Image (cartoon, rainbow, N blue to C red; front, side, top):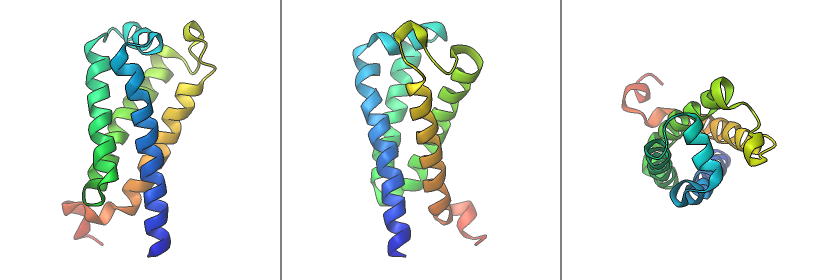
Length: 131
């Protein structure tokens, strides 16, 4: 049990730290964020909206009682980011000298969120009764 709690805390913390780190760029209108959301045709509201969703997901992830909901929200937001990279933006963003770092961070967030969701799956009302 202690080992599962430690793994959960690690997965949730990594996810929250990465999401919070990107908030600075989204909320200050950094050239990387403006480029991404302009390319997607969602500047500025998509940038600000996704930043707000990421902030909420980070907070929910760090509160043990709401971690499962934070993991779901983080998965939803980051799935959109990954699909945007795969369909429109590309893995690397040469216009902002990215070298694929943003895509790699998105994959890390996805995997950590998925792991946290798996660990906390029994906390969901409709799943908890199945196990």
